[in-house]
Image 1 (cartoon, rainbow, N blue to C red):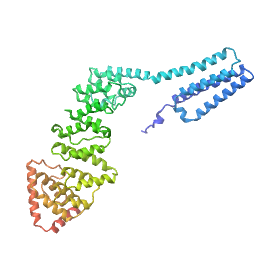
Image 2 (image 1 turned 45 degrees about the vertical axis):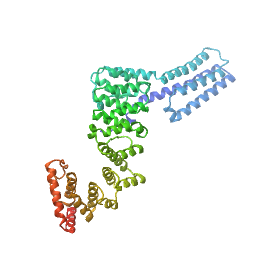
Image 3 (image 1 turned 180 degrees about the vertical axis):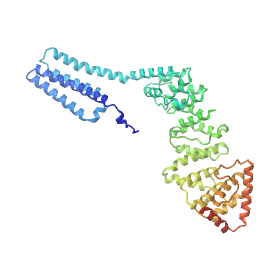
Image 4 (image 1 turned 90 degrees about the vertical axis):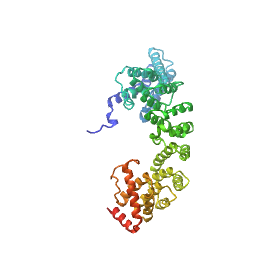
Length: 478
């Protein structure tokens, strides 16, 4: 079935009628001046003719301009009618009959009516009235879903959101409604609202603080995401430690999309959330909006040096940030800084691992840096990453020697990572299932794989390197 384009889906009849009405209203002053000409004579008749010609030329130019059709008609109506009233006053001074007074009345009443209507529109009264009607209709519904993702897409919610551009009061009045779906829908109409009147944002924040349902707190976070007041932003930042994970993620999205302005306000709350053992399963802070600011990256680099949960989550957050930055063409200064961190022996080992993964995923590491990472002074997992990357490019004796060294370490986590590389790059079966995740470190399977890795390393140590290299060549060809 052929898709209908937006321009084709419009009904041309209303457009034609609207254009005809617009042309008629603008041409009325010209017609009134022309009709008044036969009722005068001499200079007055010439004056009315000139006035009618002037009005006709202005209307003709307005019709030719495509831009004028997209502009409101009220200013044009007021200007043309008042100018025509002036021409009629100049040219019809000698005319003293009913037509003169009727034309003056039309040329005066029409612009005054249009002006009054425009003032009414600009006051926002029709929009506020429409918002109240839509809010009342929403409050009467009994089948509203409690899922926020479903509720925000309802036609009634979208219509009310558009009608609230002047005042959020009609939606705020629904926050005390006994039906949960109505309250969720009311908050959905306020998502990312920027223009709040005094006390309105505080009311939404109070609802979020008192709400028992996570969906209400999530909807409130979305509604308060565009705040500029520091006190309110700091209050929203407390939801980074909410008991519900979805609420914590919503608060993260609401706060970090404008990280450049807000980081100094929320950094203490972010640090507290990252260091809490209750939320260590949340992993890195992730935001689908803008990247972290330079100030935030500096703080996370400092926190990455600390022990415990704070250091781990700060490193993972930096890893997500660097991956996003390196997806596009990064700046040379950033690449130089990341490579410096990678090769700095004093940098936190976990941070160096994350930086190495980000650079390697983007193809920003050459073999020279990879070979430097094989040095025994580097962390074992970092050496393994470099050895794997070098072996993927072809036979590399030093990378094989590094794998032997790391495989002899009595550490199950390192042994499992080594086994995965050996199986994939050297085609040596060490008991790991192909295409499956690594077994838990404390499992019996992990203990058996560790024993096999150490045994393989001890046997390979007595074999010539050239023999192992030939095995690798065969594995890579297969």
